[in-house]
Length: 294
Image (cartoon, rainbow, N blue to C red):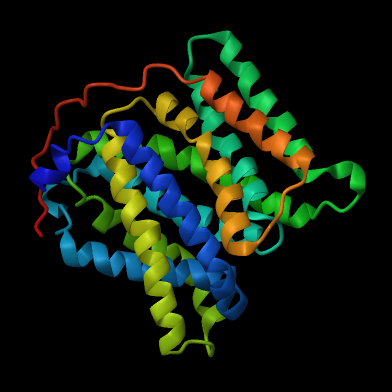
């Protein structure tokens, strides 16, 4: 765990690596969604991720206090619902468009927490980009898919706020061995019925691969990054996420954006980059010692 806490990698580097891992997992999940559905895919990803976290990190149960429980449960539930909604969205609309809509969540969190009133303009600029991405004037907008992405945006905003609180309260990755199982249980409510009867060795192997890419790698990287960044800086740095989504959507899923959609993605990225402030912060002292083990 010492290596995790003292990594020389800058926080923005951790965040970029997390974004690439998330979007690669999303792109590779499309075929899995076709087999077991979005909720089934979410359940498999989170369940296998939970097993991995439990194998590498002991849950810090002795460090948990009563006031930690609502935050831990809230983060787990938010993660589960966010995952289901995101996967349900990419089943219906392009990956880059889904990520751009979802990004409105963290960008709004960043704007609300900013002391600069002009920061409130950036979510509006990003929204303009989303409109260009969805091209509603063609009359072919999948409103259900957009709705799923909007719900994922709400979940992502809550995820950022709660993850930073958990990262400030616990060290290492032990807390993830508490929250990811909660997320898996949340997804199981819909995921198990959706995946029942469709599981085989090939699907489980594919699910394990995407589980390593998401949630294992990005959750660890994001937890490390958020301990050294403000939630506003982290949220606005995530402006690059739609660009990763478009890139991997193109390379892996062959989803070719139009010129107008490229402009829309650019507006979303510019909105996030323009609102970024104070990319580093000193992590607060931990109240409780870590309780993790390899």
